[in-house]
Amino acid sequence: MLSHLTRKRSLRVVLGGTIAVLTLLGATACGVDTSSSATQSGAPKAKTGYDSKAPLAKLVPEAYQKKGVLTVATQPDFEPANFTPAGTSGIKGYNVDLMEAMAKELGLPVQWEKVPFDQILIGMQSKKFDAAIAGMTDRKTRQAQVDFLDYQWAGTVFMVQKGNPKHVTSKVDGGCGIKIGDVKGSDANRLVDQMAAACVAAGKPATELVSFPNSSDKNLALTSGRIDAIFWPDMAVSVIQRETGNKLESLPVDFEEKVYLGMTFNKEETGLRDAFVKALDAIHKNGEYDKILKKWDVTVIDLKTPGLNLAVK
Image 1 (tube, rainbow, N blue to C red):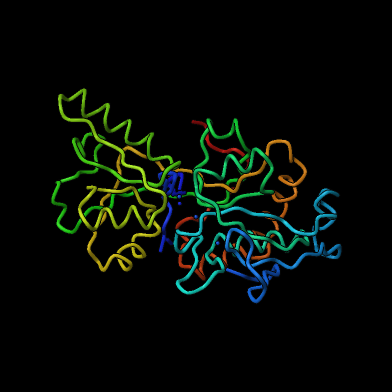
Image 2 (cartoon, rainbow, N blue to C red):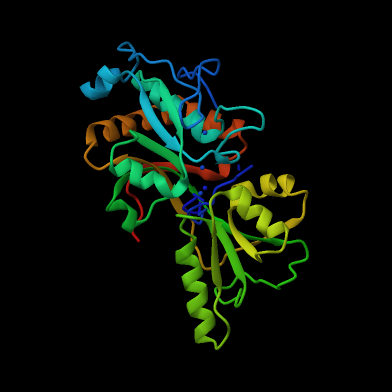
């Protein structure tokens, strides 16, 4: 996403990853109180209270039992993964539903924190957040900073203006001299570097990356012609076409394999991480995982065998 998995289903985050992609959260059964006052991040304040009778409550480390709430970061600009609907302050999306379904198994309500994508890893390392779920692409380099619990995967496409005026192709040297936009902190830099190297080797102008603070700005830049293409998760093409008035079209990215997207945990918090491994397994077995993916029409992201730090590069 995507780190950005490929990050507004508006799918407004790149799948950082590429997805960024390739970079992707509403108030559901785990107790977000949408009628209460907002936190500094703008997300509604969660009710607190550890439920010791929850199915997997005994797996929760004592510190989190005492805290009584799980603080989870996301950048809510990527529909249908994690987004704030217009005129509201809450966060919705399949990432929200998945996280809250897992947290419910553990007996913990979720307090959502709205965070710029490029600040999520920093906040995770400093323990400002207990977990994060924002369509972040699992990469070996990132595994040195946080642990990934990979729960979905995603492919990447180019989105270009209708008619493809810059004649972008799916090949690694198919976008020489063009400007590609993505969210700051996403995985797009890696892909653009590949494209630029291939173009220079062929004696053509290098591809250029232009960074934006969020997906909304990136998408506007594309529709207005300030950039020539963006990376986008394959499962969210219909969302961006709808939100941009059908001004865009997609084409595959042939040089990028599907990537794992994961929720992240501080590397010292292995107890909480392992509790979520069991919770993810539980919602697979009880059907909640499949139910949520069908609800948001994103069954294409279904990762049959989730796991920790699955990326090998």
